[in-house]
Image: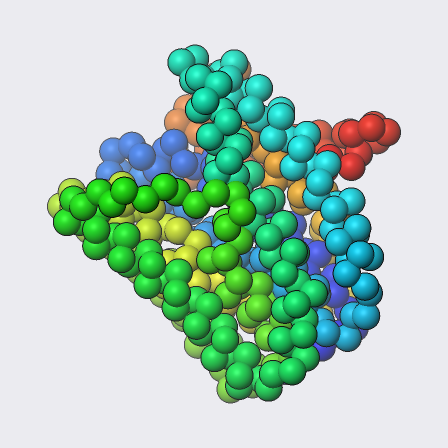
Length: 352
């Protein structure tokens, strides 16, 4: 049976693991683009595929807690709480990364930088902050939906919310395969959240349902099978050279069917077994205590990777089976330390 309350330290640990997985993806990203079929490429690609549950987990954990209709706070109180947590990070780090990009990528114009802000990506990973803001904006109204629907109705809703972005992604993939270039602009920061409503609502739905009908073996098989499917499909399509960039983006995207399946399986397993594993483990307790720093780790780690790169420390300097795990831990620890340091500065602590 899935937890309906009580111990929630497992969600704190899950956020820490998700932050570590984000770092692993970005550490191995440069290696994954080299020499298809080589050992380094295989290790980096498998790491990338195996960590793609990271951001979906952030969305589901948020939905797990925030969509509870039992919460009775007013709109103004809810929005003030959310704004106090996210407004400062969005403003400060958007300015920081815009300046960082301008000075590290010569040739960019002011127009390019303004455009990146309008699409919610002053840095590629900051889209998440804009997306979660959109989800928060609709949370009070989604709570009403959660309160007035049955469990089966919510599963239908979750299915529809996933089906729309999956279908949209497949349509885009079809158009790219046909070399069709439609005259449509990318979404602005205002709509980045829409495709991720499925994860958000599913997080709460998993909180309120029983998982007894799905065995652990099936969930583990779903997660492992999804990773393998992404890897094999990417390897085959890379070898035949069909639409490599578009297919890579789709296969590894957070809204591809295998990534959705993997993310749901991992969240179900964590919700089922996490509370029991919290009991009597000092190590797991220490991991859970790192959770307040996860937003800062997510925001800061690309800067740490860039600084290490300027110092000649890159994932390509050693074999991938060594460099990816070692550098992932180094970047994670340095990002955590930087976050803890920033949290001690009076005017900056709210930015992480």
